[in-house]
Image 1 (cartoon, rainbow, N blue to C red):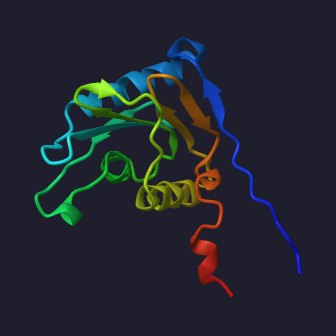
Image 2: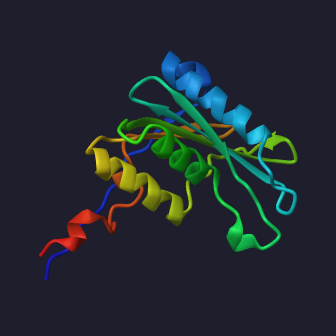
Length: 161
C-alpha cells in the first residue's frame, strides 16, 4: 500500500490593493457582473470575469430559473461565452465573487464541482494554467491553477489506455 498526500496552495490577501493591477481589474469586473445576476429565488448573486490571453475580458453571472437545475453558474456563463467567442484563445485568469442582499460575502466562495470541471476542461484544452481569484470582503484567495481545485479530476487522460 502507498499513501499519497494532495496539497492545494492558496495565496491569501487582505485587500484588493495587494494585487497586481491586472488582477484588480478582473476583480472589479467580476463584482460588477455580480450586480447584474438574475437570482430572484436564492438572492445569491455571483459574478465572474474571465481574462483571456488576448487581453479580452468576458463577464458572466448566475442565471436562475424556477426549475432550479435549468439555471447556470456565473463561472460557466463566462467560460462558455469566452470559449464560444474566442475558441482558440486560452483563459488566463478567472475572478469570482458572491453577494447576498447586496453585500459581498465575508469569505470567498469557491466554484461548485460542475464549474471546476468546466474550468479544468479549458485549462487542459489549451495546456495553460488558469489563475483562480476568489473574492471575499475579508480576504482574497488566489489559486495558481484549476488542477489544484480538482486534483483527482476526470480529463482527457482518462480516455487513453
